[in-house]
Image (cartoon, rainbow, N blue to C red; front, top):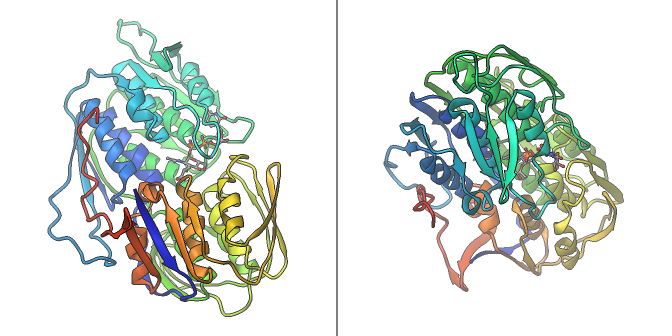
Length: 465
Ligand code: EPZ
């Protein structure tokens, strides 16, 4: 298992290009199941989650080609934007197996496209994960509203579309309220919106997720011939069509990767220029950065979803109060990184997690590094300290790992972050990217230096591996 060894105290300086969004790539790849025409996605990040989705889609009859990488950039250099072309050639498999779904909960986003295009879908219930229970009751409720029958069988959700007047199995448009006790559901919205594109009649989704990745999925579906209004707002209207075609789309930049690099610049007191930065989707986060004394300067430009901005800090960090909420609220996926940052503020901060109330596995590890954190229910009081001290720590999930890396960048001495396979799920060679900004960080495997995964290392594993 790989680990990162970090010697803290070096301000990050330089330029970073934000990659395409992981949380757009996964549902947009799944959308290729809705058509037998080619779907081309550009700026797809080279991540293990993308590899896992390729494997799952291959089992479902959707093959992915990517042009052989013309070159492997030297470590730290940004890899070339990646283009994937997906094409569904076999339309019969309908089972997303537990062995694959348990490795990546986002596999659930094949449910809506499978059901809509093939009339049936069998998807393993994802179960829980490090950040908490991950139910899909809202997904199932939404698809049942479109007429699907839902049965549970041996841990799988088995959904069947109703038969139409001509005997074909086809979903029927309906009004769907998709809110749960934690608000909207991102992948639930993706599933119901994708399924509604091929339903008979109109679907209205109330309390839809407003995340930019949902708007990106709607952009792709519309380019494929779907009729969708309101994506990115809490109310989405879909008028079903009989079939969808192919499309070619460049993914929205990854706002969570961007926020993580911004926090890295802030916690080290550096100055980093981010390009291809979706600053317009990060206003709740940059609001907190500014309150904490971080400078965020946008360079004038037309597209605020692909902007250039400079993040720096030359004053002591100030405390802040953070509450995570569905977009456009403060993103839960930047909570751990912000906790690491505020651990060094002069004063007390309060961080409250309203999306995944158990998403605090990073608290104990940050405490090992000298952070003063009092966890009480859905909140943590962060009493700022003058310094963090490097220590061996254990990554538990993707974003908690990022928080530990940020703490290591600022800590005195050496930090070893173990189980960084969590990071490789959602960050493209984060070690090389941080090193290119001046961080003293190296990847080790069984105690020996290891190169970052080269471009394309995340080729699809053999199905069933
Ligand atoms: C997406 O997960 C993201 N993943 C997550 O990012 C992100 O943290 C989350 O949205 C919230 O923004 C992808 O897009 C691949 P939800 P998703 O359904 O869709 C509850 C990362 O680090 N809920 O919006 O699975 C749920 O338990 C990952 O990149 C139900 O109760 O999250 C949670 O409390 C982690 N029933 C809340 O809603 C349901 O049927 C929000 O979950 C579905 C969800």
